[in-house]
Figure 1 (cartoon, rainbow, N blue to C red):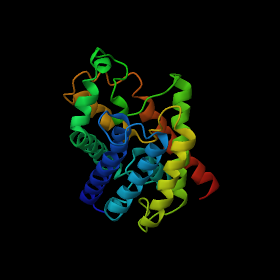
Figure 2: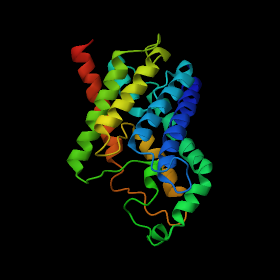
Figure 3: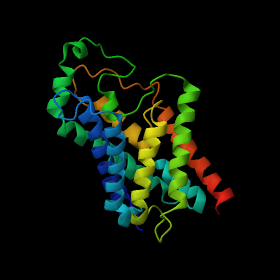
Length: 252
């Protein structure tokens, strides 16, 4: 794989991942959406199908890591770090593009939701604003060690699933055969472990859209919760590294 293929594949794939995953969050959350209040099952399956779509679309270009934690796990497993910065760059750019496209697709719904008197009464704050959950994750109960541990545990499950099945011939990431399995792993993580923190399990998935939330000209949007933002970055990266260590000890 060339660097240009990796960058293009990760940018397109992560953009599609966030467009569809953030899109289901918007659909369930925002006023004026036909899917409003569809619930946690809709969100978990929406994210699972988003993973499946993005992986099938871009596996031939970049191996479809779409997640810095997966990239770190594979780099530790294979001992190859040369392309890691290219993967990271494509993933972050793609995540920001995807989040911006969610805003475009749901523009009217964002305005309707934020023009609600209750939302309009909120002053911008450092903590989570009323639509931040469309873009990034946040804990139901703020407990630093628990929130971090939850993200680590969920990511270990994801990355270990990636490392133990479906690697393509180049050894760089998921092949298309493993895409469906991985999609259901993501659904399982969401159903079983997503309750405490919203299961980022992907630093780019959380940080890229959080930056977009901070930049978008949305009225009454509130803060981007930067005090929490390090947890869905650090937790998945630690989890990816631990999954690689488990793989090396148990499966290599």
